[in-house]
Length: 224
Image (tube, rainbow, N blue to C red):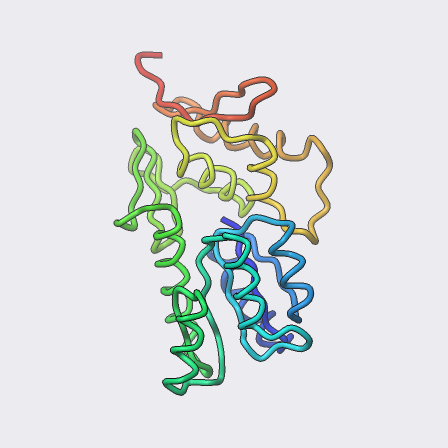
């Protein structure tokens, strides 16, 4: 999962981003409306956390442009404007949720999890594929009932594949889900993480299959 966090208060942005990354999601941070608009024009995200009071282009204009391009990515607004008029303006502008500052970090994390579930068309927090289980509330994987130890990038690889289990995931899609735009990633870096996850699934009833020239697919293994 990859999130765009748009917040001009850099200290607050760092604090929120650090918390979200502990949940094994990739977070890109920008601090003004121009950079937010550019990022949303060039990258795909699972969720946008958007402040309204931004330098340059305001948050509502960023949202208007985003929806004008036909994007349906969930948007969670963060703002100090807690008035009824402010909430109505944000929701009518195309936002999916609204959280007033100051906020409790645990509430933000819960709202983020809820929006990510909706974005994945999941009604429950638990996803199971064979003996592989992902609890999106705790952001944890188990395999055959045992916790599966993964680094953040390994986690991002497996989550992306699991949410599309049985379907081919293009290499570029996987790269965009795993690496933020500040990460240095060579052309073959993603293969290293796929290889590591494949080894950790070894001996189980699920595995990662490489489709040359197409991408990767998470499949159940029957009787192998």
